Amino acid sequence: MLKIKNIFITVFAATAAAGVLLLMSLLTSCAGSGNTERIIAVSIQPQRYLLEQIAGDHFRVVCLLAQGSNPEAYEPSMQHLMHLEKSEAYFCIGHIGFELAIVEKAKSENPQLKIFDNSKDIPLLRGSHDAVEHGHTHEIDPHIWTSARNAIAIAKNMHDALVEIDSKHAAEYDRNYANLKTRLETLDGEIASKLDSVKTRTFLVWHPSLSYFARDYDLHQISMEYNGKEAPVAHLKKEIDEARSSGARIFFYQKEFDTRQIESINGQIGAKMVTINPMSYDWEAELKNIANALATE
Image (cartoon, rainbow, N blue to C red; front, side, top):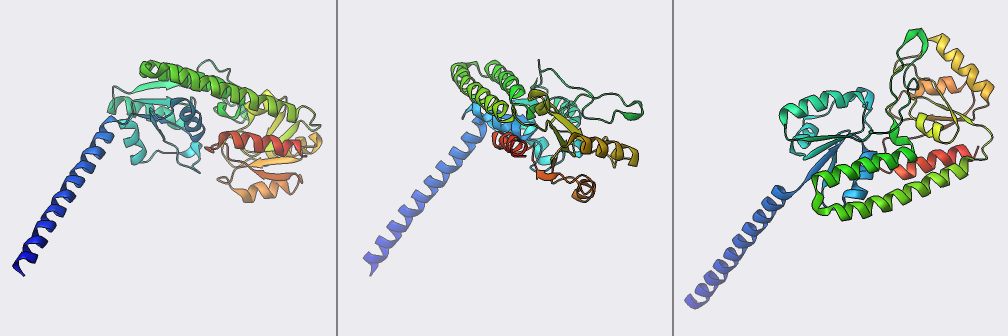
């Protein structure tokens, strides 16, 4: 009996020791990976999509704007700001209001943070994102990512930034960018071909997020929103009259906006309502869905 007891104690001690060693190994591994992880922060999900195609496994890309959030009224959470403090670089999309406050805070909290503007060298549209009545200043339209052609320039800016902060893997970033550029050019060509013979060149949208898309493919966007506020009756009448006279048959809208007013307005127009998500991570699929909706009407 004593012999069995001694064997049991020996086996138990050996098992416990092995368990301790395994736990220490796991803790060391986790600590090591946490210390070596390199992070880049971006503002929106389409940026994360594009950057991950180029960066590969060398960086973890964190997005400040949560899924389904409205960038016009967004305030980053404490968790998102903590991600930014741990980041090696922050890639701005450019000209989105919440970025301005973030950049100033980030500079004070993390002076070593490198900040890159992904809108560099992209021709910007003005006046398509704000109300033009009553002498309003024509603001820059920030939705540059809704254009496949702009996405090529955004990706190039991302590539150049990656090479600057991680030259060791420059050759890999070169290859990844070249592959992505080819895909984006193919996507642009497919959309252009699909929309080339569309008879009705005008479409409706609640929030004017597709100005660059319309520019690229010779389309006309009519926005029903009024500078982010409830539209005056005179403004709505003008836009509804234009929508009717243009023969527009598609009305794009985003779920985060008030659909009751959208449905009420469309009751006077009779267009087909199509949900879009310009902030989707699945950026390529979203552009294709927009093109398909316009091409099938």
